[in-house]
Length: 254
Image (cartoon, rainbow, N blue to C red; front, side, top):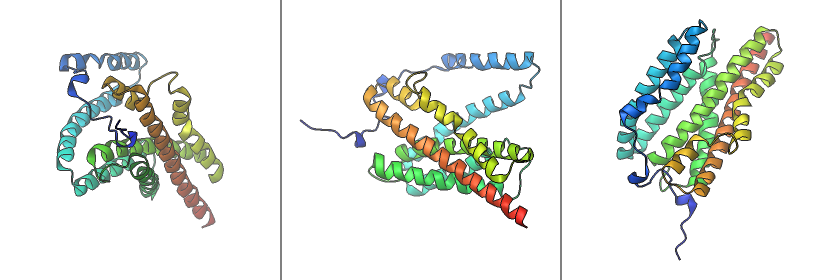
């Protein structure tokens, strides 16, 4: 009997007949919850512009990336993959600082270094140590995994930056603000650890199960995803906050 290693198993390669198709009219129904949220915002006198703009960007970006990924997957060239990772890293670093009302000199550089350092370190462990694909630049493996890692690192840095700035504005010392900010940045990820399997089935696991992947194999991949996202998020937030606290300490000494 031939034994197939789960390390070589690619859950995104499934027969097309096992994927439930979604027509555009049916897809339009998925916007109904957003409409309900917009109505609540309007009734509570909260501007709906941000929700509308975010929704429009989400739709356009996802449909655009569908075409881009088709090209990337067909090309299977390391240079193309590196360019894609560079764009993802640059965008995540810029978006991470969006909540800040005022940006200090060097903050983008600190966010970029934190996300890049934590992101690529985690990506290397997952690609080389866990999945072990035939080639390191295999787009169908590298790009989706990198996207999950960078996005979670981005969100953690964003939360950390906002809380650190708020704590400092209220007179907290750099090290105190650093500790509070890191605790805040990890709340969403830790909540997901407590809730996974009890409150919700995470996105990757849900997508695999809907595509016909055996649940026990989907669970293994989800464990990997949970570990890599929390690891990248925690390291990125810590890296950013360490740089911010050091910059504040240098300014105080000067």
